[in-house]
Length: 383
Image (tube, rainbow, N blue to C red):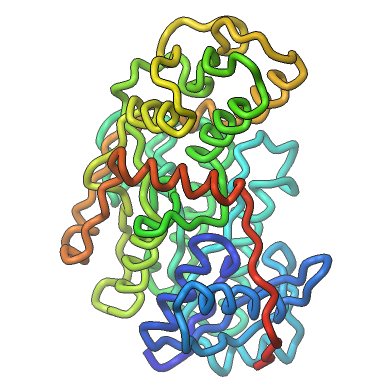
């Protein structure tokens, strides 16, 4: 590939791995990043690159930084930056997304604002700048509440959905697939992304991590916390249901491989594991990290999913309300067909997230206190 890859969502967990892997593979990359309240876009990217260097990934070239905002028309890029994109970029890898599971009040709220509106803005930039090659990171959960076999060539089959995140991602994927000026797009549908399979590193703490955080926090704060049903969002499941968790390093390596091989483009790939995780394994990991075996998981619980726990109602309510948004997340997954994926990258099997690896992920998140901030760079290099 001769031109520059325009990457969105570079500061998120998957985005920073994609940036690392694309640069390591020799690709030229430009990133669209908005400034924060305290730092410029260039400083944010410099901090991200410094974080990789601190973790032993040295010598990566600095990506070209475009100061913009996914939710603005033309991504908020000025005319000079848009001309630069037209002159240098020949592909978009659209990775940015809102992971909000909340029910939105309207189309200008998350997750619709980013997932659908942001995708529309990226496509309009492609139209203006003449970019026809589009790689789109969707999610395997565009399948909604289906419980049958989900094939990679299927999208809308009349399924219902558990939350607005799933609906917004399906509509974004439909928008990409129906855009007439693009070459047939390449679609990636990862399952639930967790931390690095080797180190446990993560920058986001949703889903699986939210339950671990609840258990770890209440165990520290509440006397008698071992009586809490740590499976609050899992309540009503038998324990033999399956969840599709995938490590971020594997997802990034697959996408980077496909991006670098034009013969693999224009397909849809389910980036799902060979061996899904049983819900009971998640329970066992939580028991292990809190040092208590014999929780009331998967049994009848009292109001708000708590069995016999004596702790402050305000604390209980706060944590339960936080986890309520994940009630649709912790359901039994369908079976995801992986025909295209296995044909494309048979040499890149998904690491198995067994009890040991999940425990490592949980312990790493606890050691991080469920927080992450990039180090301040020594200097900011602007390209």
